[in-house]
Length: 283
Ligand SMILES: O=C(O)C(=O)Cc1ccccc1
Image 1 (cartoon, rainbow, N blue to C red):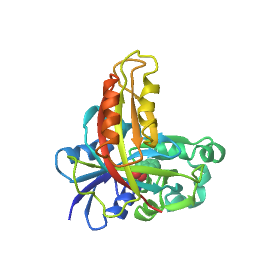
Image 2 (image 1 turned 90 degrees about the vertical axis):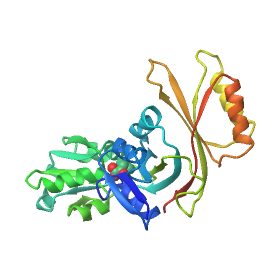
Image 3 (image 1 turned 30 degrees about the horizontal axis):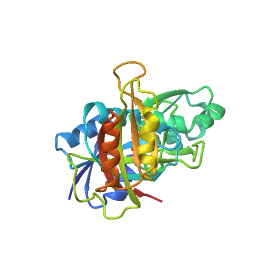
Image 4 (image 1 turned 45 degrees about the vertical axis):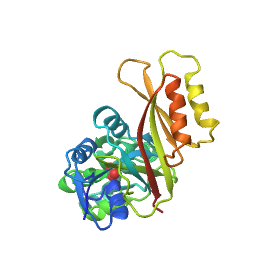
């Protein structure tokens, strides 16, 4: 049985991803994303699962930045999960959900429900928590307060809350990517089944070179390497200094990706491989 860490407490979306893909393993909750990553680094767990990107809100910057700037662990797998958000309250306040003073949740969950919150609960205070399930746990532990949480159905069950309004996310196509982290690049894949492969690169352009990004993209383009994501993130070395994260829709091979990387390096770019890994889409 492998030890698998995840962004906790019990019943987060990350926990659902872990329960689905690591059915026979031991699951250990961590309070924050950095704590979960650290647990992989210091060997407390074999794998760590954290959210990386949401279809409505974009990247989970805390994950990306911690992985890039603090603890550079390889990505060895990816799980994509459909996300449904519900507004839940303590059963003592089941009839008072329209009078809530504060709604708690993970910042991405709050953002996924902005239209609902703006139109239906326009005066409510919104408070960010480390995860959706920690918001549900907080509501359970404060029955005297008229407060709510945005979280999933499993969290409502786990913390004994009443779902006052189901499916409050603003768009139906709401999915989240979770990455599986491991201490080192491994030959075996973490799960038996998969829907495809991705390779993620971090690319830093040479400074002040006209057309550099165009040249980078053409290195992938003429090799017909399909990119499923390109995103810029601050290097944190000064205003205007950015690096790029690029996802290629295939496994690391012996020819095409290595030669694209060599071409980028010849252009003066710095390239880091963040992982080449299988992904699985949960229905
Ligand atoms: O907070 C959770 O439950 C998570 O697993 C992170 C998250 C938050 C919002 C949408 C998807 C995942």
